[in-house]
Image (cartoon, rainbow, N blue to C red; front, side, top):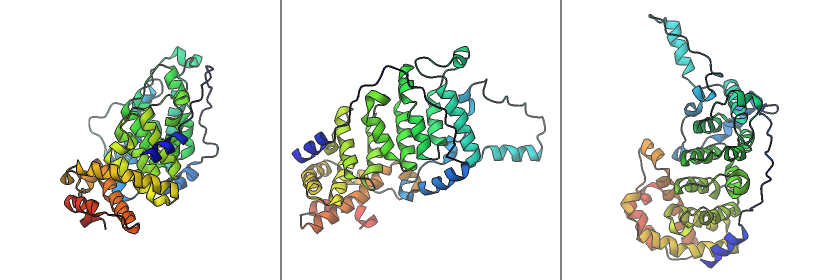
Length: 336
């Protein structure tokens, strides 16, 4: 394991000191992000059905997050609603188009920006509505491009200045949205610079999600950096978590450099030990789409172990122990 430890030490995240001067952040104006451009960018965010994500409508409505002063007062329903009013209500419950999403993003962004920080603007002090935790989740969901998420991330320091904390659900939503918009490096940047952003990588689930986002299409260096963060945030080491160990081992084999192969071969014994302690039937590949969405880590493990077996075979290394576990778990019938 010395190879992995040395690789982690070379990739330790920076720990710069944050200035005590509060940062003034401009409001997102969408100058270079027209609804048409954002819609085009969003087309590239689709993912394999094995890793499908929640419907965008979950994030569509900011609702009472804006407070009574910002929201439109609802009209009382008539005693006998017309067919037209029923159709209108159905449309309002549907997905937002690009223009509506951008408008709601701008309104919510400005609302949050003016009400957090050490010294909120005078306007917010006169009307001190408290920003709810769910406001961040709605901002993440309304964002349609990496640039918008970056703009939101620049407000994170002000949340800490307001003496507010990040919940595991908020962190998980941020990580997932970064994956959906194909910018997991932004999440890695935030977690790697805690003095600036003040966001903890909370929970094994969020760490796995981020590693899944990075280990296939991004440089191996980023996965190694993430593995170093496990120790900083007191998460189980990569070599102690079955799914994470499999993903980074696969990434090291895929990189194919002498250094990465050294790390991969150093991780193989740890992976073998983890499999020996794990019941194969507990990690059967979920064939039902709903069950698969609930336990995506099972799908990740299925395909990752398949890649590792092929890598071991290509290097003429013993892999019978891995094939036997995959047969008992049913992975062989799904992925070959």
